Image 1 (spheres, rainbow, N blue to C red):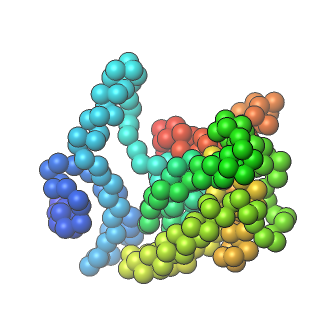
Image 2: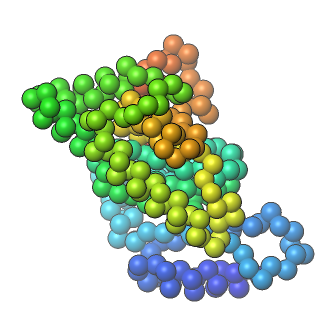
Length: 259
């Protein structure tokens, strides 16, 4: 029954969580509810999200100080699923490339199975531009962004990678392969192999990144469109396309109330 299932989940959380459950706020989602109740399941799958109460309290205090009404606190991975994947039931990797941090999430049937954040982002590319062109940070950042907007995504050039991007992409390749191995070895995973990759984040626009990853990994790699499930005035299209990669998490959080 429900109590027995929750007790089993609590026992596993106690073994795996970095803190005692009494010091955490935990939410459990059962993943096999679609099976008929009459089927007796010896095993079941559950997704558990949790965080330290002290960490959550900090966010609550920040919103109180800002005089904002905090409706919910959610994880980045679930927000990215809403914004970029929707109801796609395949095994998909989302790579959110920020300025200092990159998050890799593998989603199977809409459920995050692996989530890993690493200290890697677009800042090393900015520093490389600064050194090679003897520019200040602001000018180098602008040139880096212009590189991306001048080279549209999708299919096209696949030969090679701009030398200046190697500081970002080569370490990222190693992390992608490592996360693939983690997912393939997970007992609860059912598909086991990633079918495509979606790029997002402020540095995902950099030229040839998607094409290079697609070539090296032999996978379809796309730049995600968080506006695909949002209705907006068409005259804003060009502006929204430009800022879209930086808005994926925010849009996914806003879509929480639509579930």
